Length: 224
Image (cartoon, rainbow, N blue to C red):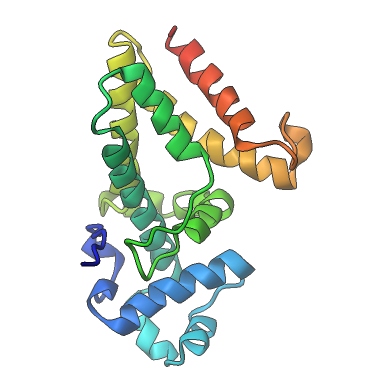
């Protein structure tokens, strides 16, 4: 029996639920491939429709614009990360070990999950590194926030901050640290490949070196 992960999405992100049809799943699948390959700026619904073999109008029946589609796939990824953290730390009782595992989940390369047939998480992780901040660094962020479009990201940060407080209940900045872990992990990887003078890591470095840096940053901050 094949099991699939189901991520609950905010209906404000779509006009028609893409999870409920083959075309909708293809829109998600091919949009991830095209954005990862060519970048979000070059991505259009016309190119997406051509790749799928459908009409541009057909794509617009699912998503109002490409920004909503970007937020959709990134929100899906945040939800998937929450599932991974819960699944992989469920039986860990030591909060230090648990937080170390969380940092590893957030900061290492991702393999495609066979439990999600129409989503390639490894490509989504690459999109997040390059395009992630474009989801909320906009002039309409307040409007999007009121629609709770960023709730999966906030939920993930809350999950991590709760684990930080398990390690040190008196730590004053758990939410700031949790979002810092997530953003720094992605920025260091981006800098490593694109702006190497902004980091101490280079392309030959392994993941464990970035993890060592993040663990030093986090556990020094919380005095553990």
